[in-house]
Length: 629
Figure 1 (cartoon, rainbow, N blue to C red):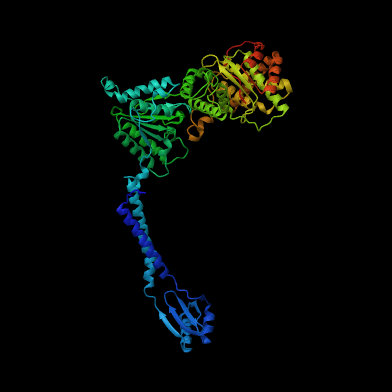
Figure 2 (cartoon, rainbow, N blue to C red; figure 1 turned 135 degrees about the horizontal axis):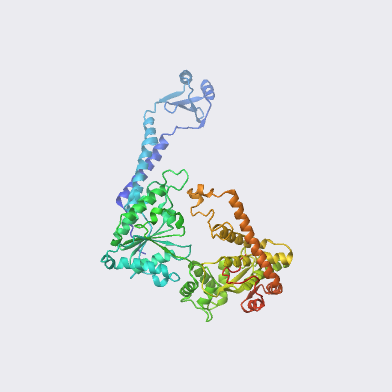
């Protein structure tokens, strides 16, 4: 077998050999500088007694070590330390000489120099050799030498034609507005003369804003792929170090490399890690994060976007970014990447299901209706979970049941078969879930109930799954929110009707209803307090920017907010109770079926809900859907 050739740097080998030789010399000389210890240690009085009795045959006086080595008539060796006073030492030596012992005096003239070499010079030389060795090795690994820690060492890839695995806009779905905005950036990088002829100034940067999992990083990579540009990917946390100046140095090095590789896209993920508002803390001094942000601002001012360099960044917290980052000339535009609507979810599911064996009845549009509000990452997880379930069951293709179970697993977790509920608990949960379904149906939902279940998943004891019948809505009137509150409080109202008291199953319902009612009072102006926002601030408390503002709401106003919130929630429960009283036989029938079968879906559930009478005092679309426990 032929061994691979090893590349050895001669200078590094020299430093390593020098350090090894010095270490050997150090160990050898270290032994010669240690005090000689012949035999056992004896007290000085014992040596005096042996000398007086004539038992000592010879003695060696070690001046530097301040010791006396003796050998008795039997040949046994021992040693003792000299006394502090020279008179006792001379007396002992005189007595040894009188008794016929051979006394030798060793001045140890060279030992002091040896100790100086061993304790001072050799350690310095060894450390210097090792330092030179490590420095040489670091120079071989990175041209920056010992300053390599301040250089950017992130990921760089060339996307576009000839690249492997690079995404394009064809791999992105559910965000047509974001793709349209970023397509212009691609054209600016590929055909800059088209814009420069009209005097258009290319944007220097674009900020991708959206909740986690909506595909901001994928969009950035797809933009680089479409633009045929080098892609520099870095996380904002990589610039934040405890060493002063490291973050700013890495920013400079990153932009220098990006300019050299133009056309290029610099993508900074989680920009809020380095771009927080400056001076927002309490008692801050010279913060390293602020220096890094200052360098980023300077670098974005110092390059010409017409030369083929654009900065993309992503964050889900634009409210805490420094205003200097968001001004024109730095991040000229903000691209919102929100959760996809029903059509977008169907397109994303089509992408993830492409190339996977699926049964004939699997329709992406139908599956998309069953998971409202899901992001792209959650939809990818749904498809992956469905594939795992199919493989676990030994199936040849992914079925609708697998996708349904995958949605339930993503929302509530896997089925908790170890949590066995008693008959009373099952009845309580069944009545609770049946009440949500009946009140939702009585108020004329814009969403159709697809499934009702009392299967325990994680911390959830039951869930109602809906199918969106029309487009996703983002603007809701007060009547819509009131109906949503009535559906949310239906479980608590049913428990009071059926059992005369509520259970702990209403915990999540109360939390959801209280948050919604408080938002109606403080954010939406839907209360007697008037059309104002109260105590709503975009700045975070930990930033220290709004500590005084948070205390600007008086105690009387806070009491009125609590009273209004409580009144709205109580009215919602009252409306739900009236609806349930008018449809109690249907609630009981659904609850009985749930106890018997655990899950009701589609035809079974629709048969029960067909008998539900409309809610009193009006009806209308309610897109909130039943609450989950």
